[in-house]
Image (cartoon, rainbow, N blue to C red; front, side, top):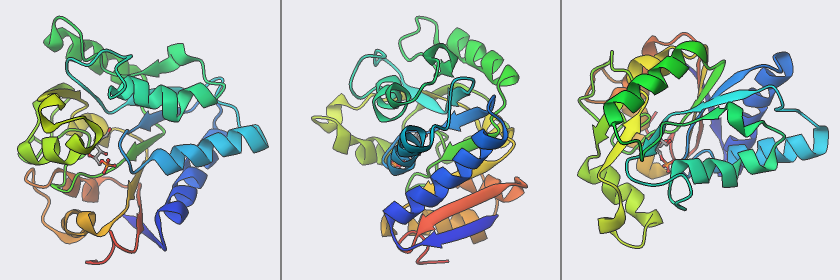
Length: 240
Ligand code: F6R
C-alpha cells in the first residue's frame, strides 16, 4: 500500500484528485468507482475545478458507486444518488446515463443486487475511490462481512447509524439498511484510492495498514490489493 500523508483535508483532496484526473487523462473511457460521505467531497471539488479550468472531459467516463440507502428515493436530499449529482455529476460534462448506483427503492432488493452485480461485471473501475468508517467498514461492508461478498443488502450497525445521523434531522431518520457493493466487488477494481481525514479514523487506519487481515476490520483486506494508495491527513495517520 502506498501511503501519502498530507498536512490537512485540502491537501489530501488535491492529491487524491490528481491521481483520479491522471487516470482519466490516460484513458478518456475510464470507469470510476465512487464513494459518498465527507471524505471525498474535496476530491470531487478539485475534479470539478480541473474540469472547468483545464477542460478534462468526462464525456466518455462511466461511474459505479459503492452504495445507496434502502428506502430513500434518488431525489431525497440524503440519498447517495442526490449526493453524487450535487457534489460531482451536475458540474461535469458526464453523460448521466453512464453513472450507476444501486437503487434503494427497488421493490425486490435481491433482484436489484443481482442487477448491480451484472453492471459491475461489465464496468470494472480503473480507479475506485474509498473512504473508511470509524469501525473499519468500506462501502457499507460492516465488520463481519465475508471477504468474498458481492453486492448485498446490509443491516447498518448502530455505530454507522450514529456516525451518519449528523446528516439527518434525527438519528431515527437514518435508514436502517443499505445496498452495498461487496468486498469482492471492491477488490476487483484495477486500482484504489482511499481518502481519510481526522483523528477519529486513526485507529481504523492503523488496523487497516498494520493489523491482521480479518473480516472484523473489512478495510484490512486492502493489504491484499496490489495498487492501493492511501491519502490521509496527519490526524488520520497519527497512529501509523
Ligand atoms: C460511502 C461509503 C462509506 C464511507 C465511510 C466514511 O459511499 O461507502 O464507506 O466512505 O463511511 O464516511 P465519511 O467520509 O463521511 O467519514
